[in-house]
Image (cartoon, rainbow, N blue to C red; front, top):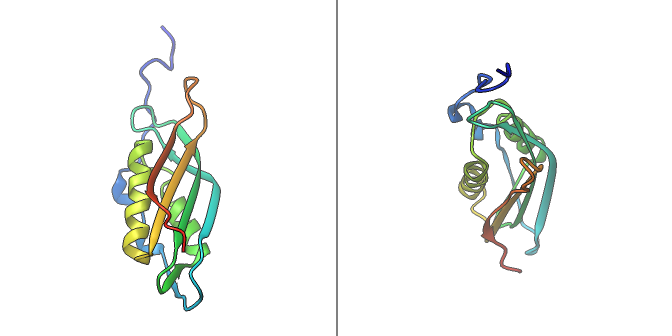
Length: 130
């Protein structure tokens, strides 16, 4: 029997995600679409504990605040050892940023590396052009 059959690497629960790391900055400029692309996102599969790697794209039209980028990266890194389904991760980031920023519109897209021959893309929200 293969050694890896049925193996699961330990991982953290979703309570380890750190939305408290997110910081905001005031925004008084004109309406525009802000797009942030993070190609190094990782969490883990809640079955195997193996890494899930994704590119996360956040697009939003700011209201009166924007997210501070270093804090966003630390927030993303807090997912690194968390066991979370790909769809739930997209939902979580969308919810945390919606609550923090209260933007005019928000869209979060995740594109995961191919697993089992299937590329997974998840998208929540929609950008309403200013």
